[in-house]
Image (cartoon, rainbow, N blue to C red; front, top):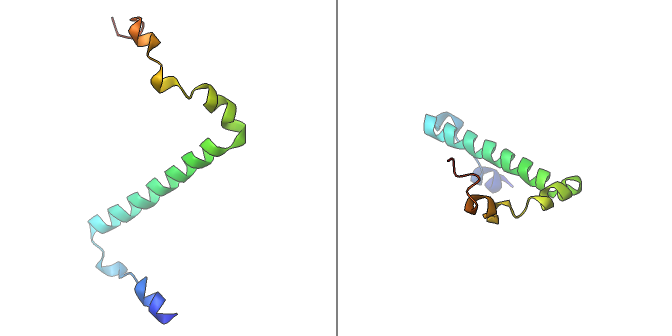
Length: 70
């Protein structure tokens, strides 16, 4: 068990500012992705997400000139 603890040992004092930024950013992105996954996989959100699943593929509004800014 001691070798496993040595394998995962981190020298916190030797970490640079870039190391801390990377570590914090990784944890924040992980938590945000976990929240998105939980939101998307909740059964009560299924109907609202299913009704909007083809929005990225729907080009009818752009082709008709409704959203072209002019």
